Length: 130
Image (cartoon, rainbow, N blue to C red; front, side, top):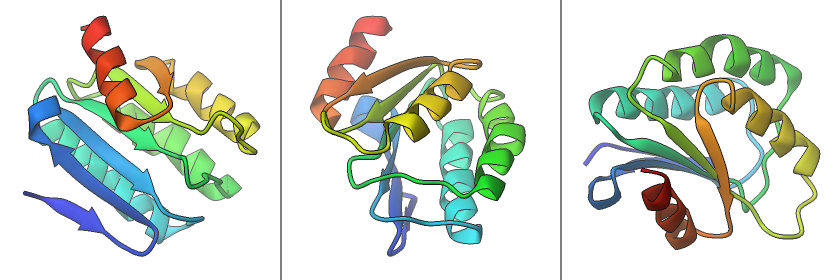
């Protein structure tokens, strides 16, 4: 199984669910942000009809350069895959609502976007949409 793992995040394809799961561990920026997100995009390209789950329960912040790169490079590239659904895993009480709302809106230009409280809930919601 292809997997990306660093002190900042983990990215892997979960075959039984047809999902690319990106789990953020802590704040990250620059190449430490771009390498794993680009890896996730490659996994979406390689695994036809897979969907994308972002686990932001450990926090999620971006610096402005990463946001610009994500919106102008990453998301348009992801839109070229067969991915149809993006799910954001978030805690109920979250101090990054504004940040996640910005990403939800931008993801929504290309994909159906849902939010869930945990991975199992995400898979249930994705299955209902398919």
